[in-house]
Structure formats: structure tokens, C-alpha cells
Amino acid sequence: MIPSDRTIFTDDHDAFRDTVRRVLHDVIAPRMDDHERDGTVERDAWQKVGAAGLLCPQVPEAYGGPGLDFSFNAIVTEEIAYLGSAAGFSLQSDIVADYLVHYGSDEQKRRYLTGMVDGTIVSAIAMTEPGAGSDLQGMKSIARRDGNGWRLSGSKTYITNGHGADIVIVCARTTEEGRARGISLFVVERDDEGFTRGRNLDKIGLHGNDTAELFFDDVWLPADRLIGQENGGFVMLMQQLPQERLSIAAQAQASAQRAYDEAVSFTRDRKAFGKRVIDFQNSRFVLADLAAKLQVGWAHLDWAIARHVAGKLTPAEASAAKLWHTEMQWEACDASLQLHGGAGYMNEYPIARLWRDARVSRIYGGTSEIMKELIGRTVADTR
Image (cartoon, rainbow, N blue to C red; front, side, top):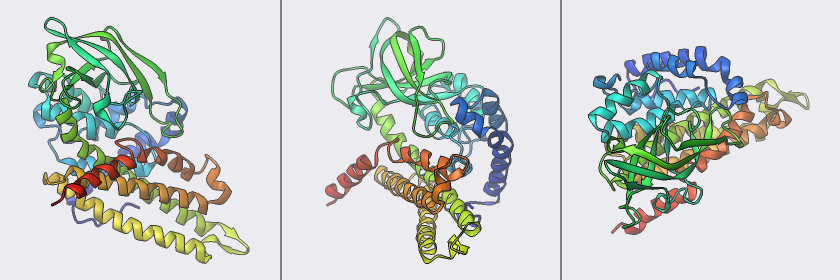
């Protein structure tokens, strides 16, 4: 189980976690197989978790939220991951919402944030393109001025919540001057003419949420759809990516813990050659190695969360957290599946879903290789 004696959390956090567990147990757990089959989470579930206060805890009270800090977001993210759900709630809470909280106009905040908090608005963010993944500066989507607004053209892919989203924050180039300096962020709404969605993409894992291709065919956007400053999008992305990567690290750590817990339970019950599988030295050594890494992982994650809440987590530190925790998640899920033997390859066992879903953690939010490059640059620049 997720450790209950972590020093960064207070009694208020513990009460909030109890609520999160209860709501997820009642609303999400019974429908997880349906979500896997349908490739989406029903609107009713979004509204129920929103009504219970699980969405966008950091949104200020003036815009319908409780005005908490990221430590409460982390609790929701951990519990969703430990449950084994692929629901895109954390994408909305940990990633999309803060672009509006920090950079949106008062009108944008009032128009969108209240619905994101109560679950009546589902959101997505569209960065990745067919030819531009981790290299955000290489995006080709473009927004050109047109009267008192913009004309947006281009396409995005691998967009979580893309099919169900009512609003999408879209990254697009607004000038050809400079790779980084020419990017802006826009809000595209569901019914905007020229905005269409492709198929729900067929993924290896994370079957329980929708992932879409998005197409923008000369979509006209009024001036008030621009978030923040024109050509200031890249700076905003860089400022928000540390929280996104910390969120992924939290998800990975909780998923790794669940995989380990499943392996311990299975090997205690399963017998081979007349004794429990856990009584073989190899099984104990594998589990001992994972237990040690999980212990280190929780301590490091709490350090990173506390540092982020204090406004001190650097981009390199967030990249390191994302790198370490997702690599450890994959190791834990793969080793735990191996300890299940043939049962681990059967979808009826939770470890199979955990293993499938873990594979993408080392890719989205910036690949492990890009994380190493970013960390390495800071090392090289150190004097």
C-alpha cells in the first residue's frame, strides 16, 4: 500500500486521501473494465469525481476551486495510479488547469475553470504532432492573424482526453521568427468550425482513456482565445513542464507500489514444488530489491513534491524525477509480472494491466532519453 506515515502530509491531507479512495472505489473501480472496453470514461464519472472535490484542487476559490496546493493533486494522482485506472483526471488537474490559472485572463478563468473543477468541462492539451514529439520547438501547426482573431491550421496526435474534451489548449506557431519564440497557446472549443477529431487511437495500454488525433482546418479563433502573451507559449510550456513531469513521477511511483503489492500477494498464495513461490530465494531477492527501490522512491517523491510546493523544484530536478520513477515503475511492473508466471500474461490479473499501462510512462511527458539530455545539459553547464 501507499505509505501512510509520510512526513509531508498533514491530517487534512489524510482526510482528503480517505475521500479520494472512497470516491474512486465507488465511482471508478466498478467501471474500470467498461472503461477498458469502451476506451473512455463516461461523463457521469467526471461529474461525480468533480462533485467530490477530486478535480483541480489548486484552482482558487474565486473560480470554483478549493484553492489548495499541488500536494493535494499528488494524492489524487497517486490513488488513481494505485487503483490501476487510466482515467484522464490528472491530465486535467495537474497539467491543463494551471495554464489557465497562471496565464489565463479573468474571463477565461471564469468561463472554463469552474466547469473543469465540477467535471462538466473535460479538457485536453495538444502539443505533440506527427513530426514533433519531445521537440516542441519543431511543431508546424500555425495560427495566423485574421482581423480581430486568428486562423488556426494543423494537426496534433496522441492527445489524451482528445475525443471527449470540451476545450483543448492548442500549441501553435504564430511567427516564423525563432523556433522557441514563435509559439502561442490558444483555447479551442468543441464546436469551433473546422475543428475535427480522428479515430480513438488503438494503444498498447491505457485502454481506459481516449487518445485522439486532432485536426484544425482554418479554425477561426476570436482574440480572447489566446492564453497569455502572443509568442509567449514556449516560456509557459517550459514553466509548466516540471509539474507535468512531477505528476508523471507520482503516477509511476504509485503504480510501481501496486505492482509490487500484487506480486507479494500472488507469491504468498501460489505454490510450486511443494512450497510457496515467495519462499524461493530468487523470489525473495527480487521482492527485496523492489522494496528497497520503493522505499527510496517514496522518500524522493516526497522531497520533490515539497520542493515543488515551495516553488523550488528546478526543471532538471523534475526531469530527473520523471526519469527515475518511470524507469523504476517499468522495472517493478516487469519483475512483478514475471513472478506471476503464466498468470501474469492473463488480462484477468491486475498485473497485466499495470504492465501494459506502464510502458508509455517512459515516453510521454518527454522520453527518458530526452530527460537524460536535459539533465546532462545542466551538468555540462555547471561551472
